[in-house]
Amino acid sequence: MKRLVILISGRGSNMEAIVKACAAEGWPAEVVAVISNRPAAGGLQFAAERGIASAVVDHKAYASREDFDAELARVIDGFAPDLVVLAGFMRILTSGFTARYARRMLNIHPSLLPSFTGLHTHERALEMGCKIAGATVHFVTAELDHGAIVMQGVVPVAPGDDAKTLSARVLTVEHRIYPQSVRWFVDGALVWDGERVTHRDGAAQQLLLL
Ligand code: GRF
Image (cartoon, rainbow, N blue to C red):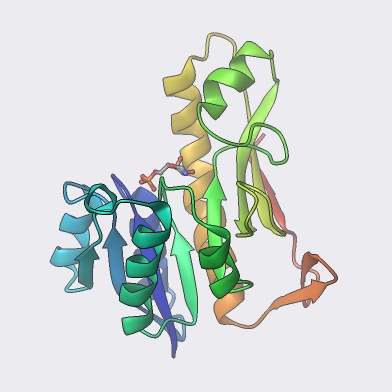
């Protein structure tokens, strides 16, 4: 059984999608802990209801990013994960932290990377007049929202969209590509080719909901 630790900062809908897919599809994996940097994160409630261990490492209690990341790593390592899953975890991580979990930490970002790294992706896509939008699952490196792409999901931008309607549409694709990506990791189906990642059997690494 592969051990998964999921990091959240808020609502935790991606975490929920992964927990549910893991149980429903009988992955050879277990979500052993959900860790939040915010005590009030909504997702903690879901973890409690499911009987999943949880922990809070409140970033406000630490003087520096290094101190916070050191404590976060200590708590994560206490659960001995095979994979760390960032699911709406809204902290910038130090390079020491990302190096520690190199090739065993995933993130989901609500844009078609490498476009729109950082915050306010939907507002910026709308401002640019983008006709498609989407989300990207990638391995985490020291550079924010970079790292090998595991899967991308694409949705149309509809006339009259605002950030709220667009983000809701993108979220539907997030809830499909993130569980799929984690499952591939669990199954050992992801293959490194230099700095890029492909699927062992050539499965489609994109989901087009157009
Ligand atoms: C998602 O849009 C994710 O891509 C972004 O933050 C949001 C988190 O949503 N990084 P949730 O907490 O998983 O519901």
